[in-house]
Image 1 (cartoon, rainbow, N blue to C red):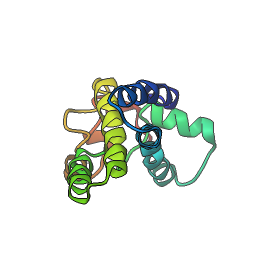
Image 2: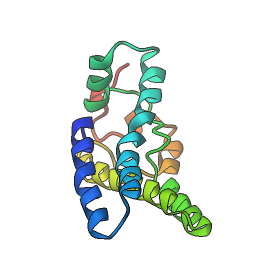
Image 3: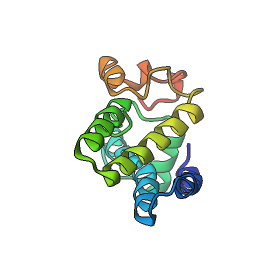
Image 4: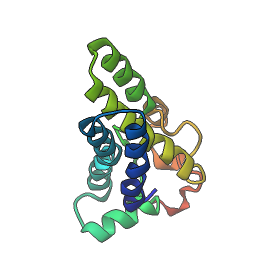
Length: 146
């Protein structure tokens, strides 16, 4: 899913949380986390491309599935589970809302990218098991940079 769509997708998330009686701060934390989770794409881009070649190249490389390694450290259901447990154990609604926003994002990514990546892609340990090798994670690895 493109960045603009993730920003737009944060609006219904905030509306759902509003309807559930959450505070404006909790809504803001969840909506922000649902967008900011994508910062891990920056690290993957710089590592795969060997530097920064501009915003246009960054978005083309990510949106067209042209990176040869996919670490995406924050894009992992494992962290959602662990974060949810931590939020419950700590009684922290703000941590819970951050986890909620990240889960919202991952759910939308899993739906939106199902034709691009293989099942199980959004489990970090599945990517690790594949050596973070995009050729073993994309459905069509022919677009990956050499």
